[in-house]
Length: 468
Image 1 (cartoon, helix red, strand yellow):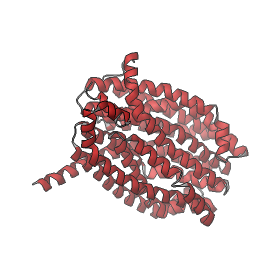
Image 2 (spheres, rainbow, N blue to C red):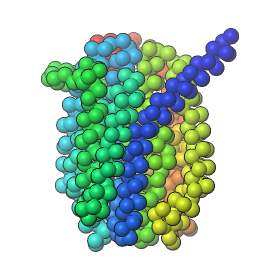
Image 3 (spheres, rainbow, N blue to C red):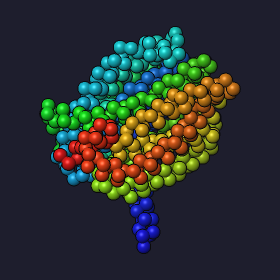
Image 4 (cartoon, rainbow, N blue to C red):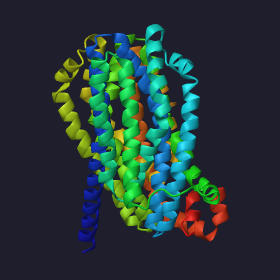
């Protein structure tokens, strides 16, 4: 009887995770698909420097977007915990204050990046006309970061309420706007990269508006921030957002290292990397969405102290990851020639596309493991574990392998070194996530018995607010 109940529990969670991930991924893939189409349009212009500029700009935008992802993780985790603990009033207040901090911090971060675009692009290895084009593109898109953050945080809040459909629709609307404006601005008005940038800004504004509207209409709206409430909620928001932002920033830093290494092999190599960079999230949008989808599930069960379902949630998420990777990798391998032809890829550019559509796409499974583990750490009070793992993977776990791979295999070795680093840290993340779940009951008991000591240890600061 117990065994049958356990099987049902896992099956139920697997379906829940699958539905949340698939619906979340539809919205994400709408955005990724537009980025993919952007790259096709740029390739159709027949200018290698434009494709390379998009590659450099994408690395910088990845860096700024990661800041928004960190704030969205904090908003979603805190609202989900409050809802799981049955405190709707606290969930509403944290929703308001998280969005307020998102706008303030996002504006400041965007301004800092905008003022330093030229040296940042130079640091990535861009030179001459390519560097000028990348900076021109970024000067238009970077100031729209606060709108993107509102959209991302609004989507996380909707998912915390279990409303994956409306969160999905916000990104779909943004993707549609981008898809409509791209050909008009890029080709119709002959704006090339400037047109692509303006379309992206319009899409971000639409995402922000369409993510906020359901919150206003169906979930109590966004109240007026109160000074006392802002001060009260800053510690739990910072406790999750700060390490989550640090965690997310590790990936674009790693991508910057890869971009810099790829720049040594010329603009064709950077263009190939840019194509892979656009193809990867489109192909594995479900995996990218998985961490955002599984986080509220783990958070609510953790808030309800149902640790068996937390463990089952981790297992189900990993099974789902493996299934998606095998299916998608098979499709990529079968379509590798048409995909390369779509971008008119030749030489080293085509070699890099073929490499990704072959063995490297299978190794993306370990990236998925790391995503799921990060969601576990963020929602179970150990966000700095995500930070250490992501930075370890994108620095000491990757730099030597990228340098070694590039020395022996050239441009292809850069991508191979990056993938192998992901394998090592994916395995480590899985092992650590299991330990965190196993120790959760004892840590909560210790926290409730000695809250001050628990707070000094820096673990699960927001737990102290669950009973308020």
